[in-house]
Image 1: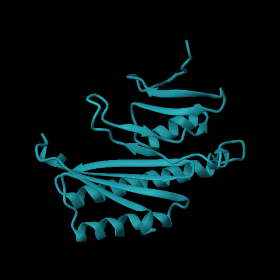
Image 2: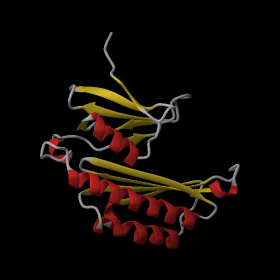
Image 3: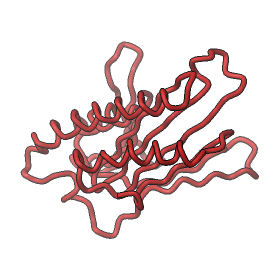
Length: 190
């Protein structure tokens, strides 16, 4: 399991003790969730945070066949931020497993509908572009609008979610409206 865990830091030196702490905490996830391809842990420190409780940040992203789970927590101590993000991740795993057990309705899981040759997500940071600071590539999964809402909630992306609408055979963008309802953007080539 340890070979699937990648730990990254920003404005922070990770000690061996912290590294081992993260590995021990995150390493327990495979007991609760199988089919994990990659676990990414991003730890960061902001010296000039407005609130002292937001100085340390721990973000955990778990990618597997047919799912992406993400949590982020901030605290005034690094180990507290790690513990809080791990607790939040465990709640998301329980919620995801419950929804996964109920299935898609057609007898197939989301993972079974994926082509075998799909690439995993890749993050590319480009410093030379003055306005674009990050490019992100990810596998777009075929799903219904209801499944897109569930995935949006599981990944903690509250603003929008890009997905392949299996019902309409097109890329759609799901977004949350100010009245706590959802909208779908259906792009058309002009």
